[in-house]
Length: 165
Image (cartoon, rainbow, N blue to C red; front, side):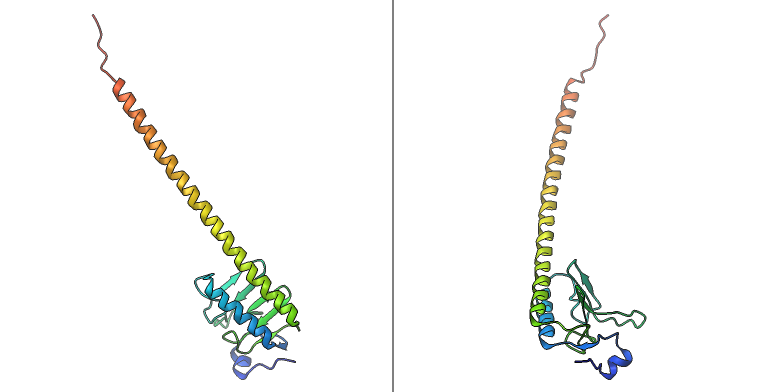
C-alpha cells in the first residue's frame, strides 16, 4: 500500500519512503528500541526523539532530525531496507520496499545479535584493558622497588674515599 504522509510531515518532515510500513515491522522496531534501552547501548536511544544516531555493521538508526537543513533519507537501515518515521518511532512510518514477516524476523534477529556481539566485544575490550592496567601497575611497582633497592645499594657503598699518604 502506498504511503500518504500526514500534512505536518509533508510540510515540515523529512523524506518518507514509498510504502506504508506494516504493523509487524513497526512492532519489530519497537522491540529493538526497547532492547536498546534495556541493554543501555548508548547515552540516548536513537529510536526515540533524541537527536541521537547509532550504527554498527548490521544496521543504522537516526533519530528524527529537527534541523531543516539536514535531510535524512531514512531513520533506520538494514541491508537494502530503509524505514522512515515522523518525529518518533511509530508515527508516520514508511518503508522503501515490501518485506515478509519472515524477512522482518530475520532483520530483528540480526540486529539484536549485532547488539549482543557488540556488548560482548566491548566487555572483552574492557576486561583486557583492566588486565593491562593491572600489569602496568605491577610493573610500575616492581620498577619503583628496583629503583629503591638500587638507590639503597649505591648509597651504602658510597663511602668516602680516603687517601693514604
